[in-house]
Length: 70
Image 1 (cartoon, rainbow, N blue to C red):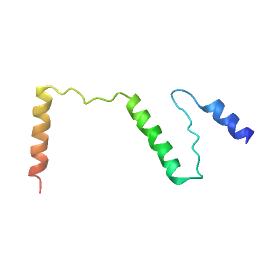
Image 2 (image 1 turned 90 degrees about the vertical axis):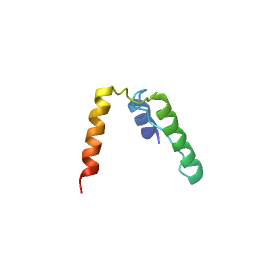
Image 3 (image 1 turned 180 degrees about the vertical axis):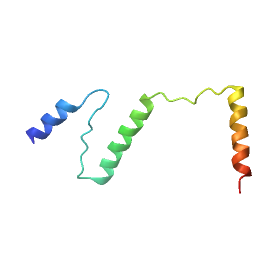
């Protein structure tokens, strides 16, 4: 167990953390994993990209071309 704890301590970082999740209770394990995923996604501050008018026109043309294919 000491080796495992040392490995986690020495390889985890803010950019690449380890999450130690208890596995003896399925519903709790899933709750902990879901919370970690939600927190990580929220911390990314994701936003939709800004699309210019010319790019929208280009995307619309590509969409029309794809929709016209059999």
